[in-house]
Length: 148
Image (tube, rainbow, N blue to C red; front, side, top):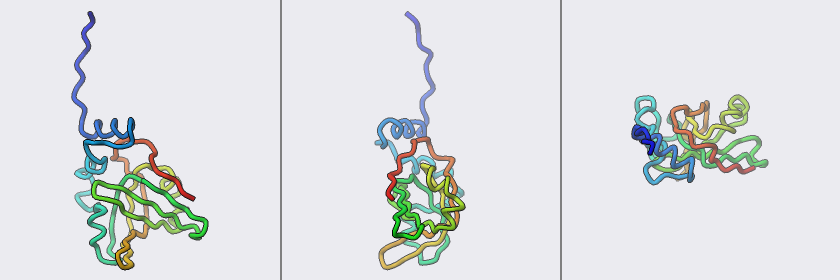
C-alpha cells in the first residue's frame, strides 16, 4: 500500500479562497478579513468606517464586487457595490473615470478605490477618482452580478 506524503496545512487565505471557489461563500471568514492586515497601514477604510466619515472626506475602500450597474438612464455613470467584512460600500464611478479604468471596473472581482465621501442624509457613497484591482485578495472568481 502506497503512503501519501503529508501536505502542509492550508493558510487562512487558502481556506477562504477554496470555500469561495467551491460555494461562493465561506463559514470561516470574509476574504477581506483575511487580507485586511496587509492593506496599506490601515488607510483603507471598512464599509462601516465610511458610513461615519464626513461629507467630502478623502477615502480608500476595498472589497469584493457584489454588484455592477450601468443603467441606461444614468448618463454613463456606473454604480458598484463592494462588500467587505463589515458591510457594503457604494461606489459612484463617473463616465471619465470609467473610460480610464474600464477593464478594472468591469472585470476585477476585488477593487481598491480612492475617492471622496458623498453624503445625502443617511445615504453614503464614494465618488471614485481612481480604481485598481486588489491583487492581495484570494482568488474567488468573478462573482459580481451585472445589471444594465
